Amino acid sequence: MKVISFTHNGRAGYGALIGDKIADFSKVGGADAPDLKTAITKNLLATLAKDAKPDLALADVTLDLPVTNPDKIICVQLNYDMSGKGRTEKESEYPVIFTRYTDSHVAHGADIIKPASSDFLDFEGELAVIIGKTGRHIPKDKALSYVAGYTCYNDGSVRDWQRHTHQFTPGKNFPKSGSYGPWMLTPDELPDPRQCRIVTRVNDKEMQNDSVGNMYFPTEELIAYISTFTTLNPGDIIATGTPGGVGFRRDPQVYLKVGDVLEIDISPIGVLRNPIAAEKR
Image (cartoon, rainbow, N blue to C red):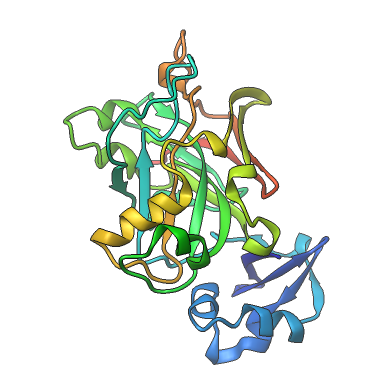
């Protein structure tokens, strides 16, 4: 099931995308499940899917972030071979973890904003995991049972600000510099995330292409590790890292410019597409 969040005639909603129609869960969920995170928390998606009818046209809505109000967005660095040489050894003994703010993201179709203060906005196509139930000290062999779904993710990075110091939070949190979406694909349609392939394109030119199965720290290991130092809650997002081919590692380097179009294509999830626009000051 593809589950989207959207705005329709000024009203926020969410539901299942069926072809070019939406079964509006927010109509049948009412106050008990006004948004996707609440529906995930209360384990209501299957019930809502039985009650809602696909009678709202996709063309009549504006897509929002799949989970509009996550408590935590946790990102992973150095989880693939970035050298292009097919290395199999990990670059770090443990996953390299950082966090992003919700307002550093835009939804599918919305403009990613190139900051006025930098010409070094880079792309990072990633698989993102949306957590489905509360967990702490989650065993690796049970970790995928804590997943509500998967989505495409762009960890937009302002490289010069990322490298001002060894702590690179600023370069990862410029407003509207990243994105995720267009929807959440539920695990019944993706029982093994290793089957996914990440392809990133800029203006239709392929920049990244790798299998999720090549991650150094697979999805279940990341969930187990992260849940050891923090409680994972429904709606939390884990971005699992990006393959080689990012702009700053290319020769010559490639950075996103105003007017570019970025696509993160993860089969079988879908395509996250965002144009690049200039910051207005």
